[in-house]
Image (cartoon, rainbow over all chains, first blue to last red; front, side, top):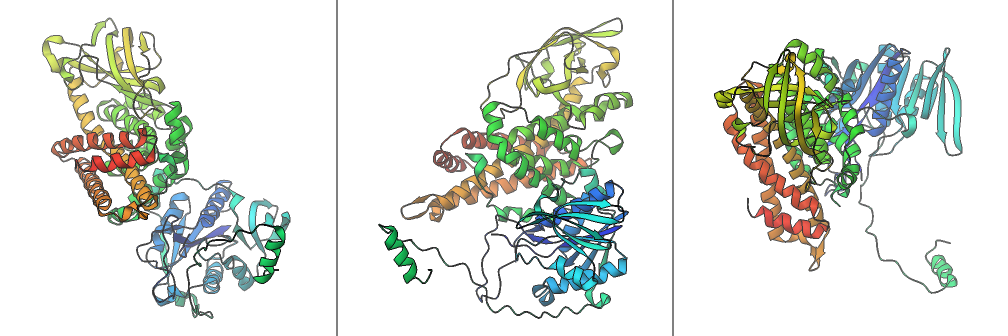
Length: 265
Length: 367
């Protein structure tokens, strides 16, 4: 089971902004809080969402190819979000923006609020490209990228497994249910990274040292004019039901009738 | 098989919170590398005695093969605390790879960095920072290990060359190295003040390698004799002043011990995680054996021992970084190293995990 906290997106201008999300590391035993309001996050180690790592890597690669000028890594969350930004900086992002959200606001921070923040920042920074991970591996929402594009009224290339610049357009190969779809979108645009887009690099030690000197700006959602009120209310969180023993049957007819009894057929 | 367990020791990561940001990121990066690139292949490397060439090259690209070396020479320019963290995490994934990293950093690059001339540093360090080449350290002989002052390998000057003769034993990385630091007696009458250090490329005429020892562990890197028979090197290949060899060796080993301790820590942590994981899963008498107090006591004792060893290692590293004496701390480290090396041997060697676990518990009673 995974639980991932919100992390950073990276914008780029010709300026790239990447949004990376921090999330709980795998191997953590996730427990539901006694009041069934949510899962326990205290003492659970968080790290960058894997799809966000891929997004950061793509941004850094585009910069290395000199197709974009600057990579800005953004994260929304409490103090710990800075760690995720530093990791993005160590991978090659130029500077970071930490949008400070903590306490109750952080607990109710969802894709809609994050996309509003992203949209506001993209406008403020005059970003040409916003790259995000396709979804976070804790809540699996898969909404932030799409909502950000809608709020900005920008084209979107989601589930990208390939990104290429073609003149003044961006070619995005998307992984869809039927196979691969290639689209051409104009910039500015929003792209969400899928698993096969690239293999994220390990930060080199000299880059980890250099990341210390790169700037991380602190911003509050109110400064961006964003209202964080959630329109969703979580009623209850429960663990998945305990797996019960199955029933063995002798014939196919028995199986069919049992399935019918259980209302499955 | 040890290489198929998952980490359950989350509580032991609490130490991460006290380290500076850069060190935390470094530690996490090395941990990720070890989990993804080393743990899955460690068992195979061990069985096949296969040198982890690709992984060493990748580590070189990250800067891990020359951590203390300044950036202008191609290194990562980091401190010894960072180095101990990196070696621990790498060793957690694969002990042999951790050993290669440690020997290259502390025992080969270490003395050249400290005692070499600028030309020697460029020639003998820079190519060894990328992971393409690794070095080794040849001090021990068949007849002396602890008594390094009794080196029977000799070096005599003939014109503009040094000629070396003798045999070095137990040299780690020997078959995979591209250079070695060798200690030989230049003035027998001066006893331990008559030993000098030399840099020899490998392969080289007059230098040959003995058979690879079939070790109980750390099998993915070679341990063999280095045999010198009228091995000739230019005068410029002497490292440091004539007669300084013993001092160079001892100071190198002082630092090297921190690297070895970090290795042992990584192995110990991996063993502990393996044992804890097994305790959760092995059902006996109707419940996981982890519910039995006796098992809990042993795991707790081991955890305390590993944490203490870790803090001791960090203390030694920090003292060295602030250029304070750290020899006393180093001696305690020696003892711990032996302890953990034995622990690892028990866990990895025994094919049956159950038996491994039992030995782990038995061993922990000695702590």
